[in-house]
Length: 196
Image 1 (spheres, rainbow, N blue to C red):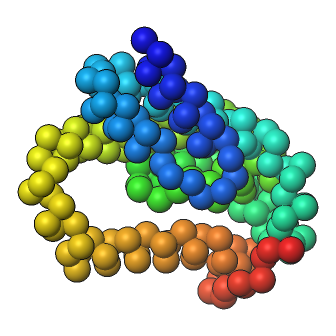
Image 2: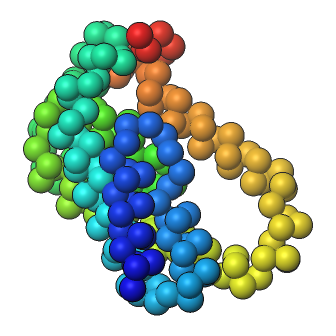
Image 3: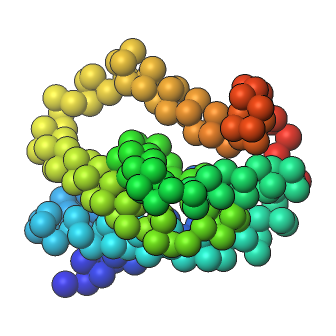
């Protein structure tokens, strides 16, 4: 029974930190395979831990954002977060779609936390999106573990490398894009000096 608790706590811990960390589903898949756990129990525990972790991060991040992120970037994150407060169904749709993608939701919850967006705007759609994406990753991980030798040969394919590079580019764009200039003046610019 303890591996199930470890899955929940590790998902909570990984998603409660404001740094880009390994996704919670990787720990879930490892423990699932190692201890032959029930994937129908692993999935909701992993998603619940991730959701609670992101919620807790959005609560404490406003206090620490000023210590690590420059003021102009904090202002941009507040502005972006306030966009999540405008229309409920649009914010839910955006958070849901973003959560379904394999991209890290750290920047999204940092913006929501800095702007003090109500958890009702982010937590329910995150849970639903995370449930779908983690289900895909956990069951794919089970398949990969069962067919490991065949998959290792194709892991360094050009398609895999391009997907990894594109993922990093999207995360960087989300962090370094000047959101205020884009949303207010329709000007597409980047600012790479966001760290103190």
